[in-house]
Length: 254
Image (cartoon, rainbow, N blue to C red; front, top):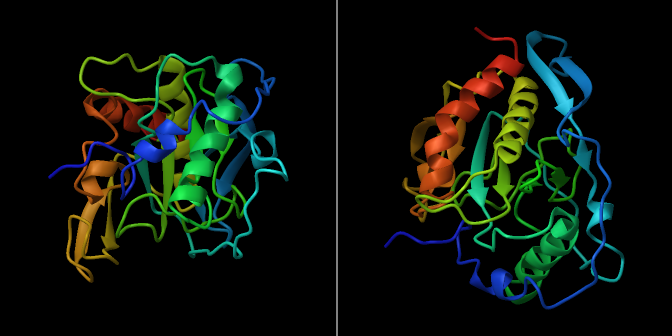
């Protein structure tokens, strides 16, 4: 059975928590929210790649204060990020972008509280206004091992679109532009073409592939490519080809 949520286990608990806690905190960002902060044109080893500008990323401190933070172990890292998985949060779409920090805080509370995860699973979250937020701890520039795509959390990054995007749902242009900018930068650090494919090994038998199986997956994939789910939703999945092309253009590819 295909799960309706965007994580390896249902997000219903997080969605139920969405409007029950905390206070509103607005974050001021310039338009467009994802506009580049700096350019990365080479890998850490110095090899030339098709780099892309790093977009502006709002830090965890904008949505997670000391009172809401759970004790957690140190972040885990991979050597690099060679693929990005796109998710949705399976939460309401009609929110004010000033409420985004509160929404992320409640997603975090659902995952670290009821589900007892060590941190929020997504590496990044993007709201309907195109604002990009740091999710999982460990540093946005580093290859932080997430908890977003069962079987394929290593050498990948998880980007969650805040909302629910079944067939016919509106997908804001600001959101897809920001996702493209983030994917272009993150994949560019390893010289990966967002339109291409990469080889990943499944680490969990509950993914689409048996544990230890090598799979050829899109470099910019939907959650459903790696796990039996309808996430990131039919409407957002339909936009994936255009997001890949936009990300490739930002990397300077023809």
